[in-house]
Image 1 (tube, helix red, strand yellow):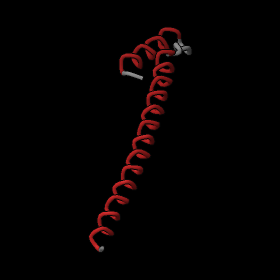
Image 2 (cartoon, rainbow, N blue to C red):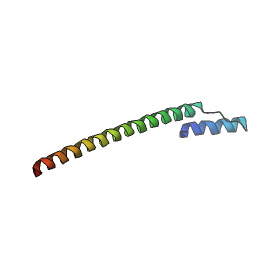
Image 3 (cartoon, one colour):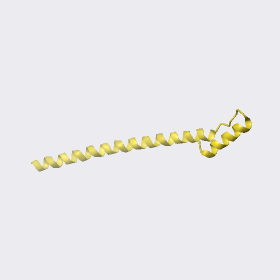
Image 4 (tube, rainbow, N blue to C red):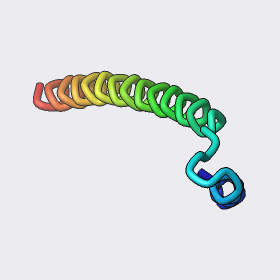
Length: 71
């Protein structure tokens, strides 16, 4: 909740005594944040998998070169 939203909620609470507005924008914003966070986590996981595959291929190539040098 932003400072502006908090001030609005407090003013509504003061004017209405015991009732404050529900801030649905915050809920929607949290849902968007969660979606973006999950997308970012998935992208990082995919990148890690690609890096692991690349590292395995690189190590395989290094081993082949070392074996060729021994012969």
